[in-house]
Image (tube, rainbow, N blue to C red):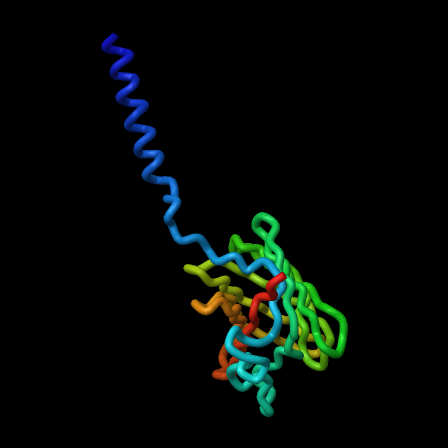
Length: 178
């Protein structure tokens, strides 16, 4: 009988410790960014949806054309973003969310896709990526830092900055409601 009571006490202690280590139901989950997002904000149309200098005249940012729509899906540890453009077809970006580099394509001026390597990880409620773009004809890769987050008002913010430059561009998207 003593052994049974002792076993029950130990089993109960392990269960309590295990439950304490598990995330609570009330824990803050990362925002779900899956769905279709259109350029613009919850409070207005497109002009307010682009912050920053964008592609500067001195050529510092060089991030290509602005996508007017994003279709985002998640499959396990991968995030897939379809970028849809007004004047040409869509472009697909894939992110691996565990900090491992992934080969991809990056739309660089003048609208040609260039090979890139993207390393992404979740920091708080943001997806933070380091992007190295290997533009043909350039001896050094272009280095970019990108942050994807959801604002309190529900807008999706995609901020990109060329490393070593003060130029950045933040695009704001609103979720399409079906």
